[in-house]
Length: 188
Image (cartoon, rainbow, N blue to C red):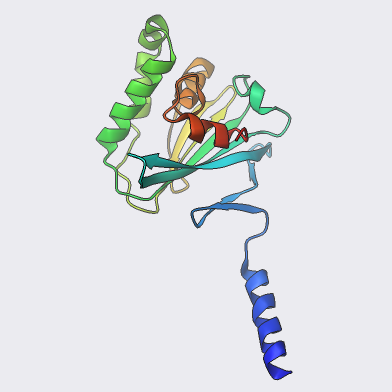
């Protein structure tokens, strides 16, 4: 009887320390909701694991969208956010290279050339990451795309057109990985 009470107490303690309203993937937690400074509510649409060379776990991500929009409306001028939690150290130069290549794959040459100053502005914000670090990119209409590392804002890049090009890295026609994109959009 005493063992049952101890087990029950341990179970209740475990439940009380578990985060409420969180999604978990690869032992990494993401909130189900995210609130902007303007109290706009974004809801988690999906989480995903990105593997490099099939076996290496590179990072996990979560995609949030204005609760009034559907995943099919992600290109609308609404608030959206992607969070990426890294499992390995990655130098800033690798983010610069990947961002440039992936945006170029997802937009026309004309659009890429038009967006080049904003791409360079975003690339200047990147920092080296270590395992456990988390980048978040949040687009806010009329403001731009804010890049933050571990919750600390690094800067904002203006423009709705840039935001769509930037988010296309993970969610576009030619994303970094189609399975990753589909899971982020909740279409798996």
